[in-house]
Length: 489
Image (spheres, rainbow, N blue to C red):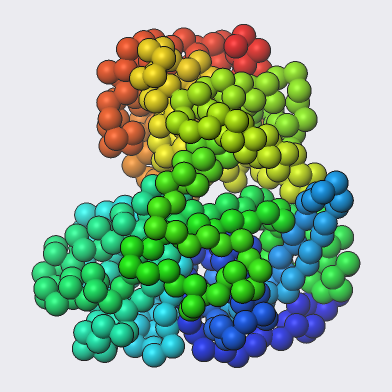
């Protein structure tokens, strides 16, 4: 079979977007949108991707000359919809941990055409890391990389305010743009960069907060050969996603619809000065339902979200009760509207075309729980003066999922039914769990995890009854197995 590069050809355009992150989500979301902008408007711009970690998909993407295919499938109005698009909006992927690529990456800072920065470095990516320096090639942290890049641009254009960039991060944390800017400025201060640069950040650049919504299971491994036969070419970077998509972008200065004419291209993008409602609804219901369920379900022998929805005896009731009995009651706003959104979410989870792997959702679950489920747990406790049992159980399931003492590269090795799986999170989190599990003491482990204020933003052992309930759930999981522990709820 011919390769995609034999059938499809890259299209040369000015590089208008710098993107940190080469993973499935941005390729099936932001780059897909840019591809449509190029087709339906006069945007005329390509994306250069920066691989945020030393290991990634960059080599594979470059082997395919930036080309890949999005496979969008779902059910709309009772009818099956399938959309295939060969994406040619990506010029290349640079690995800044390689000297030549680092040089090419920093040269983009002086590009007259460059205007936008997108990113998705997971919830753990927008964080300050002590020790990053301006002279590092590259900096370890994502905000450190951004600070160094923007400073190079500031120097290249001598502080010209017309050469600022519009930065739209897609990491799923509250006020992602504001937090990224705060840490960038922290590095600027720490590196003793001139005051003029900080003023340029404020006056010339716009760090937008944003919310993204599309379920992207990623590479359709079990169907890849069949899909390639259908397409007529081999594509090692197929990316499967649902039809639904929403991007809410909150701007502090002005909306940038004129420069990113998404609506003109028929795309579901909302520019706003306050995205609070959209964010809270999506993060706490859709993403919260994922994080609530996946670690328990995986340990119970399930592998995909679709299997969870199909299991009407155990996992689906757990997810449904967690959403409708705890998450929604913890929230402000119209109960009717929130429940309608939740019902739509469950229908999206059932999409038979996108078997979303639970292990892929498990990445960085500690920071995900903090962002997605802890706000519901705390709000419920405050509102009803009691603990939400499904959310508390999911916290115990998280602790159980992270059981391991051995490493495979940077991942901790867990075991399920005699087989191993990889637990992927920040080195600090994994090292902590590996140390804790040298002695399997449920009470000590629960207390140690809950007291990690650096993970949760507060000492959770101070929440009345939480340490005891988490410990009891953890003992139940260990003694009876996950399915029996879930059934006991």
